[in-house]
Length: 308
Image (tube, rainbow, N blue to C red; front, side):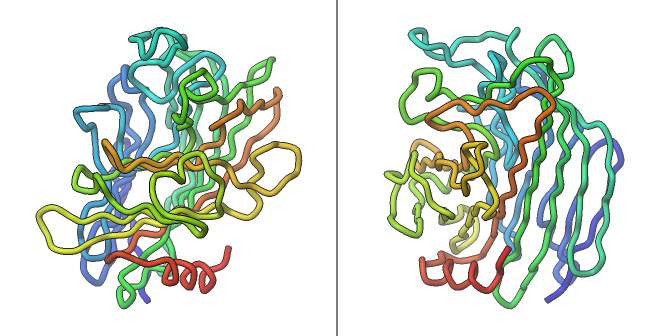
């Protein structure tokens, strides 16, 4: 195995590369973008070790979908997701006064030690009016870069602290009344070619896994432009606690392969999650990016060989 390298274009983006081939594994873009799209950092393009892109950016159906990013679709009446806001009985409405942002506040670490790369960032969360609603400490680690196996892994940790004098309520379109639309939290948008891809979990297969619980979920798609497939495996850390009351994880999966490819380990799919003033919500996820269409046995063996 070999370690990733880091290149920082200050004020704009951080690029992580695999040094043997020179493939850019991803760009972490943290410069602010259009207000309507709820400005926030994102990873795009994300690539396999073979160089194939496995994310989309500003697709024409949802301009605010940007690669892999932390989102909050319904947050105490605000929209830190971007675009139109779902209102029960009215559908999606253009309500710019509800669209907030997640702003870069500084880096604690941007480094590579030859084995893994680390981006440790501080962010602030704001409603449309600009008040401080939350602080976030985010840590993105790139590790287990294995050219022989054609895979690499990313661990994303977010610790969000409520800075209001009242609870923060994390919700989703489903908690607001729309069935099976529980997206919020860490969100991946796949490339257009991945439409109709294969959805696989430890206990089942297909988009019927929407709203279900499981320790991991995988999505495989076939590329345009180059031959072959890629697989992304999304996994929860064992300590993730969806209820906030000391249980052990799994949040509910949001997953679609039609009309586009998307996965989110939603932290508020069916029910709102309440974060008390001064309290911190911590979530840790792993995303494995692999060349090829992995089967369940391959995924299981990989996760067993790479424990948390």
